[in-house]
Structure formats: structure tokens, C-alpha cells
Length: 136
Image 1: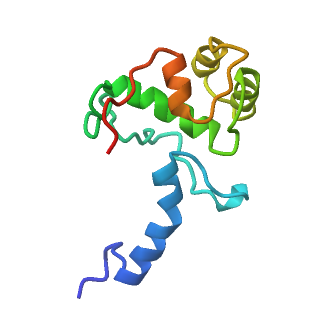
Image 2: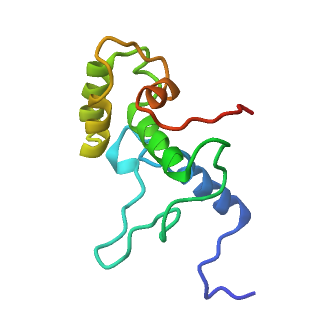
């Protein structure tokens, strides 16, 4: 048996997998305490991306483009579920609290002020984004 490598056993692999599951699924830190977050890459290491060469192509619903999916996913990740139902000003405030990119904030500021939104799909429709034509 070679003990000169860094391989783990099955149990340790499962523990490590569980530790990063929230980050992988949510795309952002999921721990309440900063010390519990996985360490970011070092200064001499590249940033890790799901698709370093561009936009992900797989899994795009009919009627949407990969850019629509990516934008809607970014909105959903920044807004979360607890903000709904909300009006434009509440959504903008939430994005600022989350330190969202300025492009997302500017996009949400274009929403009608008097309309109440119940989910990110309604926001996408109001912004004129493509949405799926068939729900699975």
C-alpha cells in the first residue's frame, strides 16, 4: 500500500464532500461563522470557475439562452427566498445588503416601482428576459 500520496478513505471523502456541498450548490458561502468557510485560493492560485472558458451550455430550458439562465441564477442567488413578496425598492435594498454587482442592481432598478414580485421568474418577465416556455 502506497502511503506517500494524499488520498483519503471513503469516510473522509464523504466528510469533505459534505463540508463543501452548500458552496457547490449555492455558489456562495453558506456558513454563519466566517471561520467555517472554506479558505479562498491563494494569491498565486487561479480563481476556480464552473466553466472557466465561458457560459455553461448544458441544462438550458427551452425558450431561454445560456445568458438568461446565468442572469436569472445570479439574481436568485443574491436575492434568496426570504425577500418575497417584494417591490422594486425592497429588492434593490436586498441586493445592496448582499453587495451584489452594480450591473444586477442597475437591472433591478429598471423594474416598475408599484408591482409586487413573488419570485425571480416574475422579475425576469418584467425585465424582458426570456423565460422557459415549458416547465418540467
